[in-house]
Length: 309
Image (cartoon, rainbow, N blue to C red; front, side, top):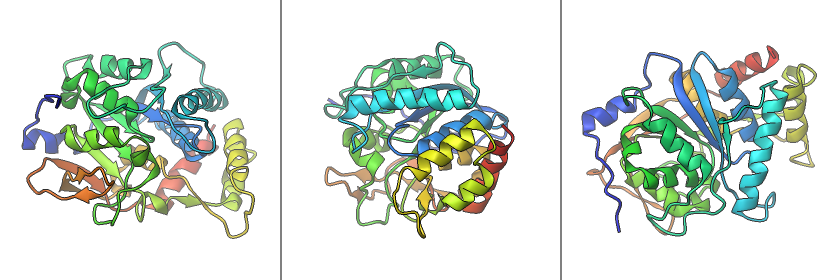
């Protein structure tokens, strides 16, 4: 049965999709941190960009690949990795900041997976009078976020989801790791009417590449965090000759820091099919979609912040 989500009128939705001038904004980060090596950069960036966002919580998201035995194991490994990164940032561990998320993907459309992360997202988003939204930076499978929306449909009126996931809407397929890990959750983001800023991967976040020589020049030896990030990138691949690594997930934080670095456009939300393709419908609600990333400006900002540790 379809969930009756509240519907924002078009003017209100478009206003929510414009980044407010008043900063810092309230934000939480939903991350499959151990999945590879880019979430660690995004987590540190979100913590350090204090003038742009006030990070209120970090949620561990599920994932399944060769670094986990399944979604629950991936979530648990991500939870532990979040703590390791925060330790290297010198962040004191505190209650009510890092939460375990879903131990499995949505079993089907409209079927949430309850978790401490989903419950905390509901609590934080529903606090206050709702005039200022909670920005939900989502850099993994959107299981926790979709579950929270299903547990409390009024979140549509209280949050803005900034999601690294999927492909450009004119691409022949929507297939991408975050999106296809939990298809019902991804479909919900496009269907629920929640304010959504989507950062596709191919030809958009894909620009955010760095190399070991660059990381060695600007990060290694400067801080515990810099050494850790250099080491995990170096260990991610065995052949480093003419090799670069995409640090996709920093795009979501960069959009909050300076949306001019992530040009975007308002478009009608596509329908994400069960075949993992997009079907266009000009009668659907609006979402915002990134079209490019200013790679140099974003990495200049990241390296400057990390060097100051």
